[in-house]
Amino acid sequence: MDEACEQTKKKKHSTEFKCIIHLESVVSEKVSPFTNVRWKRVTECASKWQKLDGYDRILAEASRHLFEGSFEGLHNEGFHPTCYRRFIDKTRIVKAVKRCENKISSSSSESSKGSSDEGLYPTTTKKLRSSSVLASSITSRVPYPRSSSSRPSRSVLPAVCIICNKVDCYITVYHKRKKDKLCQAETKDGGLLRQAAEAKTDENVLIHIRDKDCVALEVRYHRSCYRHYTRFLSRRTGSHKTDASLKPEYDASYQVFKQTVIQERLIKNQDILRMRKLVQLFTKIVKQHEGLEMINYRSDRLKERMKQDFPQLCFHKPYRKNQCEMVFTEELSTGSVLDRIKSSEESSTTGESSSEIEIENTIPAIHHEIGLEKVRTVFNAGTIVHNEIKDSPAMSCNWPPTSDDINLKEAIKMIPFHLYNLIAWCIGATFEPNMATYVDVSPETHVKILSICQDIVYLTSKGKKQTPKSLGLGLTIRHLTGSSQVLNLLNKYGHCASWDTIIDMETSIAKLQLLTVNEIPSGFAKHVPTTQVNSLQL
Image (cartoon, rainbow, N blue to C red; front, side, top):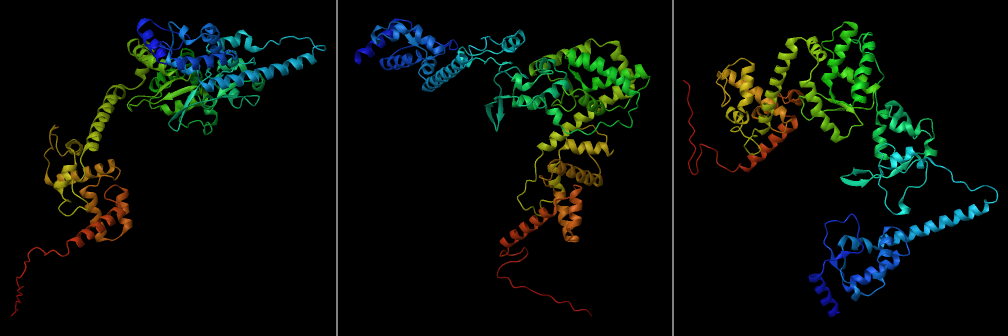
């Protein structure tokens, strides 16, 4: 045993080793020399692999002369750790044994059946569609393992998903990545597969299943691919009703729009267009063919018609709310969509044609130039104020707040000066362009602006951030009326806290008062007699 260890140490320093059970996928691992124990383990597994099939049998046959020898006869033979673990894996050996047993049993049954029918029928090989050029175009994209048992069976269509043309598909279920298995069609139309392919005019699928039996063809698909492919057929959509403002003449223009824009640009050329661009193109076509102008035509009307006529179109809403939806076909992958966005936007801005200029002329100059600039300015101002409100502090006092905490001084601490100044400018209280501190207004206006600002802060936080006004007004209404209906009505419009919050506040104040019931009130002192003075009226 000691001699074997010393021999292994000498080998490490003297030679470079070569993996004799090498896998092509292993590239960057270091080759280690065999030890006596590991060599015995490899030789045992090699004797088993020589009786089985697969790539491991090829490795065992190639190094048979080494496995039949002794450990002392090794020179520069070694192994990669990954190759070693895969070669001696007991689970793989057991599966290979079962695979060979099944192959032997199936071949024996076929041979017995063939011998019984040999005198009656000639033995001819049936030509299947899987060996044709059409099937080879699909299987060429799918790398099958080397073992003969794992290759696709000689079925009519190869064992790949007819939708995504892949064997393996991984999905996320409950935050775990799982493999989606291939399912075989059990109906003639493949469920809704044929109907969806005809509605989308998807020739990649129709070329295989048009006017054919999907069960006989052994059509396969992943559940996730099938669900995504046929989702639009099970979607709840109302009956197509013609809009009252949409004149019948627009139907002719819409047919031209479908042919020139949707069919040619979106589907055939696979362009990516914004929804605003599509509305402009449709407006231009209506003006050219019917001489009518649609200034206030809404994009959702056109979107609904496009969804019903072309279910293969995808409508993607960008993260930024000031950008229009992007429209493209579902055949585009995520990478191609990102690549085409920049090119389409650059071509639309730099190479703008005369037809696009005419579309812009159909919209009034004030609405197109000044109006859009106003929208951007107002939107940016609202975003800035919203972020300042979210970062504004809440009431700094402990619960429950007392009279010292419900006042104007505490209220001003919760109001960001961005919001305060914006309200002051909106109502015309001042026109001082000050963005460093609160603007100066009259005391009467100051109270009213604080009231409005507190309502906005309360509304932005959805009632989670209480203000002096919401608590003080609610407590006042509770003491004056005692009506929960009045209090809930004011809470509905965002003026004060809810009934439950006010009751909880009163309960907390009462408990706080019980803790201080033994204290001497202000104005009184210990061991000092009380003097009562009676005034006599003459």
